[in-house]
Image 1 (cartoon, helix red, strand yellow):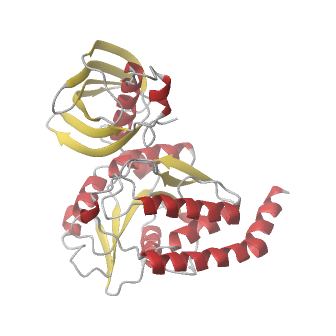
Image 2 (cartoon, helix red, strand yellow):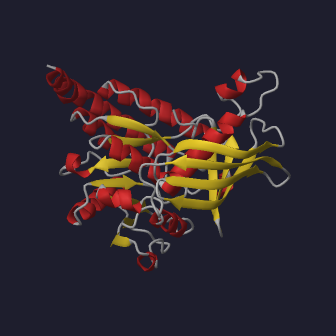
Length: 371
C-alpha cells in the first residue's frame, strides 16, 4: 500500500541542477505514528526510506526494488506534522540500476542522509513519456479562466507526457494563450459550456489522433502532474481498468465543504452502482477511450464527471482508485467555479435521476453480467 496521500502529502516539487526536491508534509494522524513509540511519535528510518522510494518511482515513472542503503546517518528525530524536503542529488541511471544521494531536511536542520541503490526492470532515461506513448495515452486539461495556473500545469505535465490536449471552455482571461508554443494542442470555442462538454470535446480530439487512453487533470493547479507516472504504471498493470485518483480527505488544509460533498457523492454512487470508491469527485482520472463510445450526457456541467463514473460502472468497467496528492492554496487564493447552492441542487437532481435509472438499467445489467 502506498504511503502517498495517507502518511504524507506532496506539497510541491522543485527541479534542481543535479536532481529534484519534493516538499512533503507528514500527516500527524497516520497509524504509523501511533504504532511506533506512541507516546513519543517519530518517523521510523525504514519509513523515511520507503517514502524516498515512492517519490523516486513517481519521478522516474517505473517500479524500483531497493538493493542497498549506505552512508546512512540519522541526525534528528522527524516528528508528525513536519514539512520536509526530500533532496535527491547525483541521480545515476545505468542499465538496470539507479543510484541516488538523499538528504531529508528543512530550512532549520537536516534529519537524515543516505545513499540508495535500486534495481529496476526498465529504467527510463526520462520520467514516463515512453511508457505513456507505448500505452497510446494523452493528457486532457479542461480549462476555464485559470490563467494564473494553466501554464505551470501544462509545463509540468509535458515532462511526463508529450501529448497534452487543452480544451478552452470559453475562457475570457486568455487562459489558453501561448500554450501551443509550449507544445500543447489547444481546442477552443467561444462560449462556456461546462466541464462535461469540455471533456467530451477532449475525448473526441484524443480519439481522432489515435489515442486509446486519456488522463484528465484539472487546470487550477490542485493536482500534481508528478503523479502521472503512477497512473502510467497502474495502466500497464491493469490495461482494461478505469483509474480514479483518490485524495487524502483527512489532510489538514482540505476544505470542509469538499469532505462533506465527497462523502455525499460516494454514498449515492455506491447506492447506484454497488461499487465502493473512496473519491468519486476527483477529476484526476485515466479513461479507456474505447469504453466511452458516443457520449450523451444528462448534464454538461461539473456533475458530468459523476455521470461518467456511474455509466462506466453499469457497463461493467473495473474501477481502481489511485492514491494522488493534492494542493489546496490558502482560502483567499483559491479559484473555484463551483456554485454551492445551484450546483448542489443540480447534483441532487442528477442523483435522483440516476437512482431511477439504476433500478431500470443499472441493477439489471449488473445481475445479467453475474449470470
